[in-house]
Amino acid sequence: MNPIGTALNEVGRFSPTLAARIAFPLFMRVGPRLPVRADAAATHEAAVRDTITVNGKRVTTYQWGQGTETVLLVHGWRGRAAQFARLVRELRASGFTVVSFDAPANGASGGRRTSILDYLDAIEQLQRKHGSFHTVVGHSMGTLATLVAIHRGLTVGRLVGISGVAEADNLYDGFRRALRLRPEIAATLPELFRSRVVRDDSGVELFSSVRTPLTADIRMLLIHDRGDRMVPVEQSQRLAAAHPSAQLIVTEGLGHNRILAADQTLDAVMEFVTSGERVASS
Image 1 (cartoon, rainbow, N blue to C red):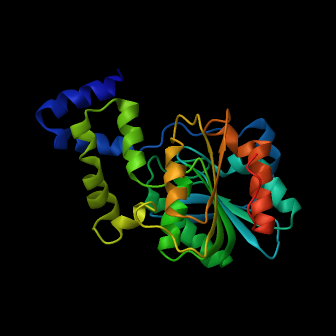
Image 2 (image 1 turned 180 degrees about the horizontal axis):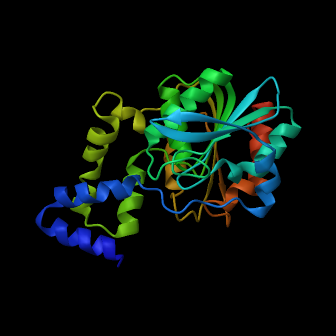
């Protein structure tokens, strides 16, 4: 067992609440930064870079191209904008402006910890700069951040969720599994999230687009691998069930991260973004 999890479980035998409070800073800490892959380096370096300040942390933003329509890319936990390099090239070839950012504690941005509120702040700042987005593509937790941002007023016509988290409960479950925490410790994490991150109960329901679906006017494409070990495919299945007009494509053998650069994913996303019609699932 993970030694940190073992120690927390020992504390949790006497006080699950105390153990959860000790664990919570780890829940916010991202860990080692993902390097830029060699096949993404040229695209990464070609971006026009800028910085914004998100909750006191320096965040690096990226822009490719000067098209009339803009697509926003939102990476996941311990991710970075460069993961979308192949998609960036495809979108640029189709005439789109592409923008993205490295969230705090990720990629080239500052800080050691982050939360979904940092993602929301960055997304909102980019919307103020670029206006409404033609499409937002979110990966993993980036999908959840985008869903919440739309609830909070983000203007977007189409949403693509890849390996997407549909509700914050999945984040707690993943943290519990990683440290093998006792269930009673993990059960306290949602309350700590409300009190320390959201800070009040207004809007907590927005952190689940399963319980609080988006309006039907937003077109949605979901792509998820059946063998994803980071975010279970059930997350996208539940999100699709809550949005009857959404399309779900389930892949095989692409995992959680490889799916971003897979031909099947790129073909589906580009067809969806450029036509807006349902795309072939095979």
